[in-house]
Length: 151
Image (cartoon, rainbow, N blue to C red; front, side):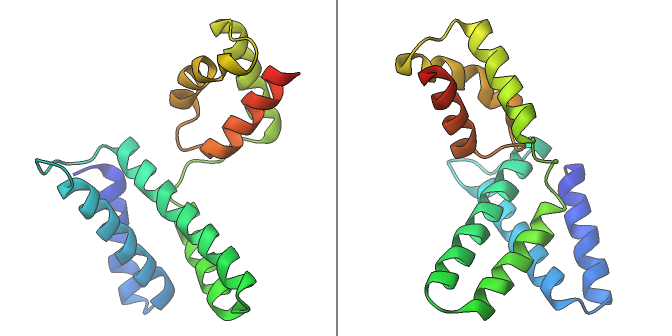
């Protein structure tokens, strides 16, 4: 079992003993998402820590999008719950890259790959995606690559 998955299970036990409903529910949901990913496909397998981080990032993104939808729908109570769940998820994800760090990585990757213009976006993204895995959202990364290639 991966160390991150073990940590999620141990923290779930701790949260249940402390009767922390929000944390318990969020950790159960995360472990379910990890388990679902493990049994998806033709053969069940154990996820690596990097794959678990990817699943957690996906779940965090779902919470942010749901919070926005609830805000727009006039349900601030549900939006607050989604944000609280997102905050719990964030504690298990690697620190996000700052705008300056992201800009520097993109600049270096474009220079290294020789990408030019809008057609070079795929080449730059191919180099960058493994470097920023879990530390920056794909949309944020793509926007910075697009901005630098256009300018």
